[in-house]
Amino acid sequence: MRVLIGKGDYEEAVKLYLEIVKLQPEACAMYNLGSLYAQGNGVARNFSEAAYWFRQAALNGEEKAKILETKCMLDYMAEDLEEKTPRRLYDDMNYLMRLLYPKEDNFVKVNENLFALGGHFFNKKDFSAAVKFFRAAGEYGNHGISQNYLAVLFNAGMGVVQNDLAALYWFDRAVDNNCEEAMADRQGLFKAYCNFSAEDFYDQMTLMCGFCAAGSEDIPKDAEKADYWRTVMEKHLEESGKSE
Image 1 (tube, rainbow, N blue to C red):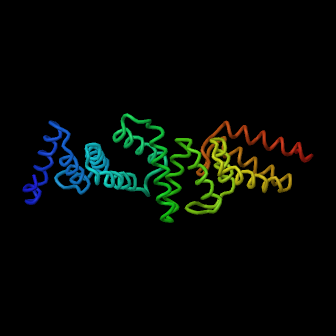
Image 2 (cartoon, one colour):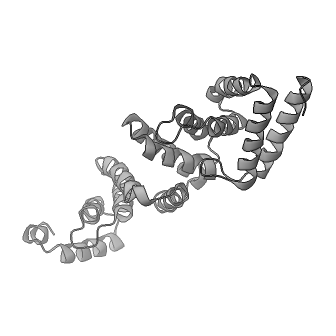
Image 3 (cartoon, rainbow, N blue to C red):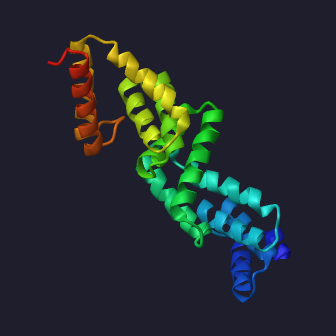
């Protein structure tokens, strides 16, 4: 096979490696398949297939394959990232985790890896990409820590247009998921709204209810939260003696 690769006969090399792994779990052949898929040699470039073969190589004792599995996972998820929605990212990660870890809890693996990639882009200060990954895990995986990070980004206007109502919504969702880091921020932000005049508080909470009821770019449609914020609004206005 090295002779074939040396000659540049990648298509034949792919065929032979595939024949080998059908017969036995040969780590070197799996590793080389991963490399060929990752580079697009002898086959169309396919990062999910590359990650799969590196995963198989790692399971069969090829230690350096684990790093390349992770790299191909990142390459697969980052491919055409500007065009991908959070929903698409969630679905892509769901597919990849089923491919790579068929015996593990897929829901957990999807959230773990979406959050990890959100953190990767956050640390690189690519906040618009980080928002997409945190939104994918936060909205579709109901992942509390991702919801907290998303709220922080909305609160600071990093990677998104600054939106305190969206920040409050996501902090509140994170608190529902027992994310302790979100509790103080959720309370502090809500307290700031409570210090508004009765009219302004009513207007802002009415906006929140409307966004939750109909959905918006920053807040997903969430009938339960629409009812919740309506109750919160009414209770605060009643307790403050400023009920409309």
